[in-house]
Image 1 (cartoon, rainbow, N blue to C red):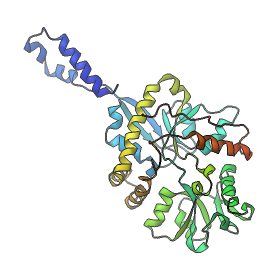
Image 2 (image 1 turned 30 degrees about the horizontal axis):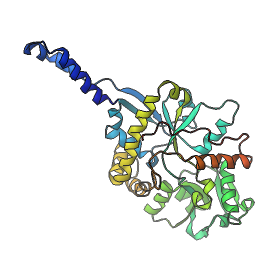
Image 3 (image 1 turned 90 degrees about the vertical axis):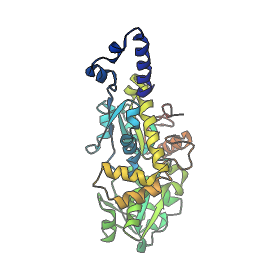
Image 4 (image 1 turned 45 degrees about the horizontal axis):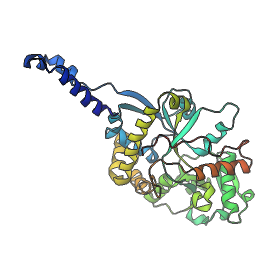
Length: 341
């Protein structure tokens, strides 16, 4: 039950109990009024992002700004992680929720001591990542990555996703020159020929290329092969919280869903809310990104957050079949149980 409704019920009960009091007794002192009209204390809840704030996260900031979390009795603290700490913080109970990814969490699920985490919602309905390159490099298909440099973070899953996308077009991944490097400014790296191509998210770096009038080619993994249409990013929580406080999870997702629906219906206003919360962001980039993500948060899905079993298990089966994980996961690691109906 939402806290505002609870207040109304409590107030109504109090009036019935005081029905025999005279007017002076009901009115009470000014201090009594303050106590009677006070809001119940909100529960402090922490959400750990996957990286610095960006438009993947806009729905959280919208729900926070518009009071959707408060309506559910939640005071939300949105924090940035130390490198690679989101999963550990949520699994240990130091944060109730976090932003995760189906591909990167797989390694934990197949380890001898898997992190006790469950994906409880998809932030974006489809995988919106792919490969960007400078237009004059002519990389307008995955097969044409042959003979070009690619900035890799040396993940076997990462490299095999590219290998599969290339193979679907008759390309040979062994002919790609891998450059182990961390790219923080994609446009600068591509402009200076530090690299020819890099993995990005369409809603951010492709939006940035448009804002900067940078001539680019972009290759979409999800459109290359349906099995690569996995969930990225997601919302995660701990199995312990699922066991101990499922109502908190439902309340959190109810407010979060409202935030992302607002983004879909009001992308410009939602972008302004994000920029207000994180003023160091480039407002032009945020607004360009929101134009795209407003069509992608739900996209062709029936509702926000829903995880399709065929796509989830299909990707994990693909990882197993290609020797990228040591045990079959199938449908392991997610639930739609807590999503609003």
